[in-house]
Structure formats: structure tokens, C-alpha cells
Length: 123
Figure (cartoon, rainbow, N blue to C red):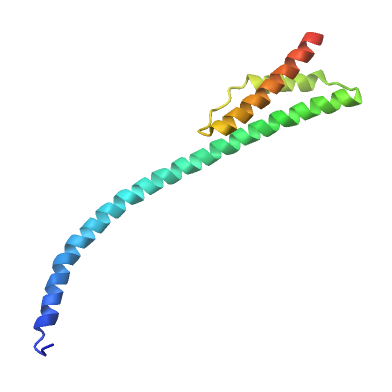
């Protein structure tokens, strides 16, 4: 290496040329990736919220079915509980992007419909 600074000068020139080009490419690509990541994050959050709402819906139906079952076992069947279950069933359920969750909820709804039909027919 010579002491006249020519090597360091050429590094600076090369660095400036590549630095300007590299920064704009990195910023452009990072910007697009950042936007896509934010969109994916929003959709992931939305999917989690939907999944949580559907799980709450399923739990609610199961709780209502359990109340009816316990009422029948102790000999105090509440038609009000059956009416609440029927009302809940009439509410339109959202569809998830998870076929397994949709299948489980459909099975719970079918069981609830069977119970409603069974006891509605008997009255």
C-alpha cells in the first residue's frame, strides 16, 4: 500500500457509487417487503380474531347443550334454555379459512339442531 492515499481514494469512489445504488435497491425492496409483511400481519391478526370468535361461538353452543343435558338429568328441563339455543343457532356463523374448525362447528351445530328438533317435537 502506498502512502499517497490513491487506494483509499478509489475505495471511497467505489463505495460512493455502490452505496448510492445499494441504498436505493435495499430501501425499495425493504419497503415492498415491509408493506407485504404489514398486510400479512393484519390478515393474520384478522384470521386469529375470526378463529377466536368462532371458537367462542362453538364453546357457547356446547355450554348451552350441556345445560340442557344437565337439566334433563336432574329432571328440570328448561324450555327457556332450549329457546336460547335455538336463537343462537339462527344467528349466521362466519366461515373460517380452517376447514377442520368449520367441520367441528358444523358437527356442534348439527347436534344442537337435533336436540332442538327432539324437544320441539315433544312439546
